[in-house]
Amino acid sequence: MSTEAKCPKCSSENVYQDGNLWICPECSHEWSSFAAEAKSENEVVPDGLIRDAYGNVLSDGDTVTVIKDLKVKGSSSVVKVGTKVKGIRLGDGGDGHDISCKIDGFGSMNLKSEFVKKV
Image 1 (cartoon, rainbow, N blue to C red):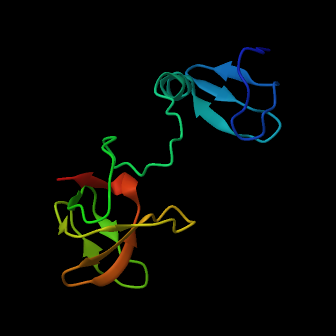
Image 2 (image 1 turned 90 degrees about the vertical axis):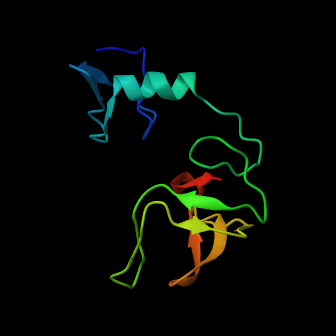
């Protein structure tokens, strides 16, 4: 049994490694040892700024591009990759949706900053 790592879900020290995965027997959580190493190397100090998927700081009025097809909740429509969104407004949606905007053909909606790229 290894005590060099802790479970990221329940903080248990009773974890063991199985190949490339770490496993917590208490909460049945599994995670990659590579993901744990990458997370510790790229750990970002929370500074209160909202950043796009590539780490660029966003501000009100910026233009962003969607980097992933996004399903619109309550609709069968999809916001396609490459859709340009102008004049964003930043705010705290509480559920991770920190960008308010209007998209042509869809109207007002909220986006997560992790799915956009600053233009």
